[in-house]
Image 1 (spheres, one colour):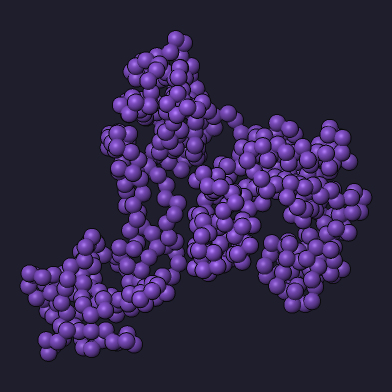
Image 2 (spheres, rainbow, N blue to C red; image 1 turned 90 degrees about the horizontal axis):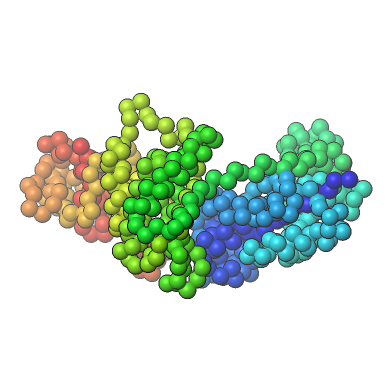
Length: 517
């Protein structure tokens, strides 16, 4: 009979992030999303760090923990190498999520299930993935739980013909992904899946949800999920070899033009466009300066919309000119390779009704990036935060922001809309007085010593009478830091001249942070 084999690469988001940054895998590390631990490795768990823990609590348990940002795209891209290697051993893999993949067991080819698991684990370890575990069972859910139950680089083969039910009944209920169902089962005194399996089927779905009811059917030999092998992704990388090698940037770009057009057409045939491309240039003495084999020049380029053939040739030319100036290329070019790092459906970047950014502007900005580096040109974007300055962030032109604070979170103490039109880089020293001419101060409980009557936005500017005001919005920032942090209160002030300002009372003085149009 066809058995299912599941490969589980434990703590995959952490492994992918460490690999991307070139950090050793033995370091305690955790991936954070919205300031909470999304995944952590065994070294971090040894310090008591676990999923769902706040970042502050995790760092208090282990100050040396590597703080890594969550990135689903990075995890998927890194796992593609594992999928490709497994497809070479056994076509028809079924990715479940980054770090978890199922395939039909090749036990007959390797002479047994344990031998098949060992061979697959060995090939994954050769890719640098150390923590890999194999589970084999009659169906998918049982095989996954078997992989999660076994040790490092080991294989757990659940016996066939009834072994799955015995194995699953002994598992704790927390293997269910539904946290509410797990909590309810534990409150009812059901600690294992065996207790769940003994409940009536209709009552399980109504009380505990669809997933618990499906697991119950799996234990009773029903609801098995077949392994559906994926269609291998097409080879989108395009390259051109030069024989004889070319020694000028203009000649290389002219000869690569047709390859760039084929690259774009190949993506267009799949109704996709490339927004991030890696260009590799090989020479007759590639890697001679570094003493290692590999391309002489590698650079990843991003585009604010998508790459056309002319855009690709421009980036190639700028890359060649820049590397020639830096001395990274000292011999003739033998090969150019175009690798799509990010390909998205073309509908995502279709032109709007009223057009978009002028292409001449985009090409000019991209050329500046080619000369000065990607970080030389940035674009402002909004993120979550309490003050107007906290809500500002800058990302390199053409890049998609991935580490911004969530704007949907409540952010207590933030000012209500509308947002200020102008945010000052350096707040101005300001003055706010009441009717008696005394400085208005914010009291410890959040009240004010008097109503603001006059306001001077900055030194040297005339005083203005306050027509209306709103606030305060008090915020205590960094109260856990040594020294007690910083307590501020923000006000919206409107003068009789019609100008509106965002003023901040900071400890014992006033500042002008922003202005409204």
